[in-house]
Image 1: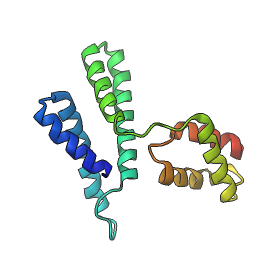
Image 2: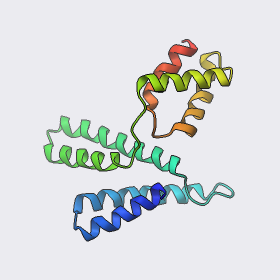
Image 3: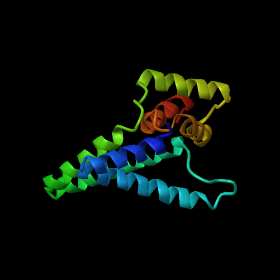
Image 4: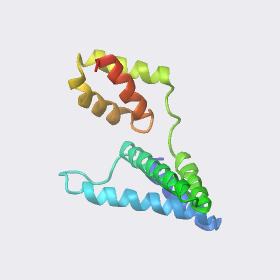
Length: 153
C-alpha cells in the first residue's frame, strides 16, 4: 500500500472514529499532497507525486509546525503549542524511522566516493542525490553537517 493510500484509509477511519484532531491533520496532509500534485502537473508526463515526494512534503509540514511552536512559545499560547505538537505526532506516524548518525555518515561517504565528489562545490549535487534517494529517511540538517565536514569548508 502506498503512503498516499495509507493516509486516505486512515483519514476515512478517523472520520468513522470521530477523531477530530486526526481527521483535521490528515485533511491538512491530503490537501498539501493535492496542491503538490497540481503544481507538478506543469511538468511533462508527471501525474501524481511519489511516496518520496510525499515524505519530503510531510517533513516540511513538521518543520512549519516547529516554527509555529517557537512563535507560540514567545506569545505564551500553550493551547496552540499543544495543538501543533499533536499534529507533529500524527504526521510522524507516517514517516520512517530516521537513520542514525553512523548510518547517515556511511550513506554520505558512500555517495561522495561513488560520485567522486571532492569539494564543497559538489554539495548541491550531493544533497540532491541524498534527497532523491533518502527523503524522509535521514535528517537533512545532519546530512549537511556531515557533508561539509567531508567535503571541506
